[in-house]
Image (cartoon, rainbow, N blue to C red; front, top):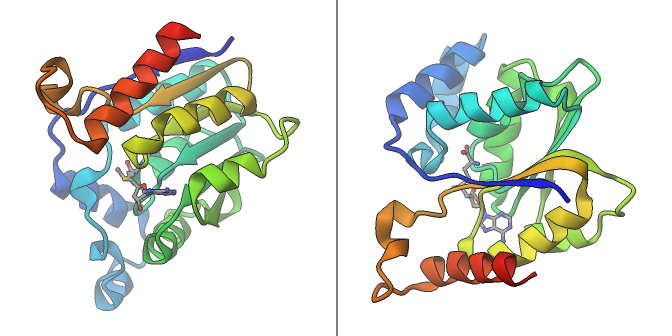
Length: 199
Ligand SMILES: C[S@@+](CC[C@H](N)C(=O)[O-])C[C@H]1O[C@@H](n2cnc3c(N)ncnc32)[C@H](O)[C@@H]1O
């Protein structure tokens, strides 16, 4: 059985995110001229606190292989890839072509290209296509909430014994606790919690 963490979102500081990506870049002026840093909504990326938490988990288990489901502009991917050894690998699943391009650009500027592979497409399909033998030390789920249970089922298949699955933003800003609140995001998280308590 893997260890499973549900994490909640704390207010993010988009300025911090841009500063980190800028610092990661040796060519930030070039990026600014292409608009590279600013083409995605970094305010929906993880907080710096969660980035550090992800790093600490990877370092604690001496992780070499990470799967990220939903990567936006590569902010959390950069936090995690930095905690991997030289021969480590982070596989980033992303459905938006623009996001995939921005991830690759940011990762390249952070000097992490050799450690990060981006797979463009629907994450559930990409996960289903991965053989169980291709196991990961940690799976970080941070994509569309309606698919949370699908991602979790595949993550359990793909994570090594004793590995870690982390699911982001399950609190939905406190709305989850209010049963009268319902939308496809909340219902997606509730379905995942039901799945976990019933299996
Ligand atoms: C909250 S953002 C990820 C933030 C990122 N983990 C970070 O902290 O820097 C969610 C991402 O999931 C992607 N996404 C949404 N649905 C997806 C799907 N079906 N397959 C793959 N990616 C998806 C979105 O395009 C978006 O980039």
